[in-house]
Length: 175
Image (cartoon, rainbow, N blue to C red):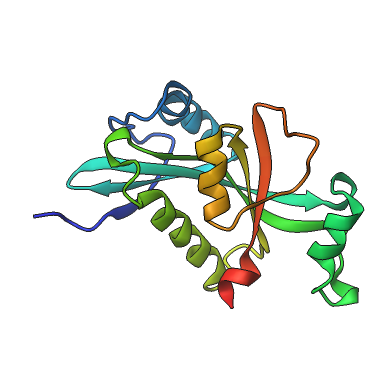
């Protein structure tokens, strides 16, 4: 019988169960997530199914700083906000790491997990964030994945960098 996935928050002292995606994400999961949690920099969650870790993600507080965004893009971001609520930075949650184990990739789990995160941060407004931001690996399949899930580039200056800063406006999902 296939059990539904279970979400678990990992604490620094929790053993990291076996997980295989790619070397960078595996290393974050087994080592860096522990340090990041101890230092209060991020929190890592796992989805387990049939006692196996099938996915994980880490989240931290962040923001979109107005001075880092081109004026035309900034105007689109703040236009719907009441004038008195136009802060110098816009609150966001950063998905710092996001991984699906190799055997579960390309089965829709990534999209389902992103939708879960979107619902999670819009229902009950847990942290007062308007946006989700990611530093997506600048690889065609990864960029296309985030674009299919409603993410847009925040800036164009990073087009040749190893990662691209992308954002999703949670208000569009809430509606």
